Image 1 (cartoon, rainbow, N blue to C red):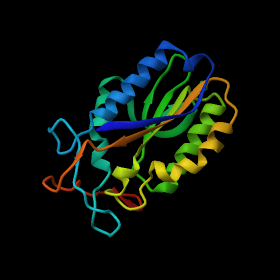
Image 2 (cartoon, one colour):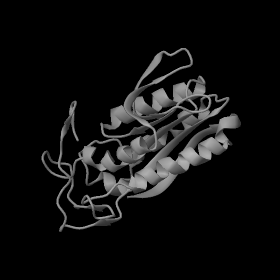
Image 3 (spheres, one colour):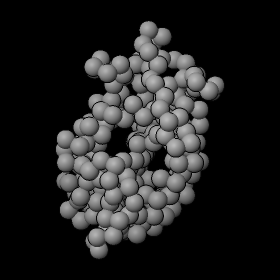
Image 4 (cartoon, rainbow, N blue to C red):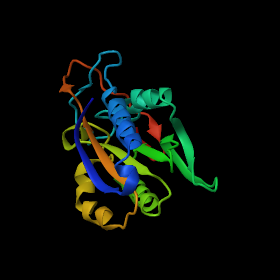
Length: 202
């Protein structure tokens, strides 16, 4: 998998300039790049079939397996709750790392576009309030999106709201969106299977 863009919506205060964040950011990016299809191929090749029709296109849940596996090996809590300084739960996230000050949380989008907006709004609020040190959302690019489950969260439909998330006050923290994309496309590889995740097919 390759990263084609990283959109920084908030980067302010001491944590954004810290060595811990530089190391953690690199770790997250390395985890994205480890995603592969077919499994064991060492790269990510997508079966180029539109996901517009039911039962067509590629699923999304299997894409993130190597991502979370890598982060788990680095001490991240997978699909666990982040907690504030009072020990109160902030809800479950795909990956959580205790930081030197506040937690760093990552969401890998496997739901529909409404889910992406909820994730971004929540991450923005948590960074703005100083409850987390960094919030990261990983979403497919425009080129990859067309081959995945229809209406899956994607960068194209988030772009109009960048100004809103940038305008929220921030004293210290980071808010970013990672845009990932396939390395190659080929009809010779199998489609990524679809699984059921809530109301959307993964």
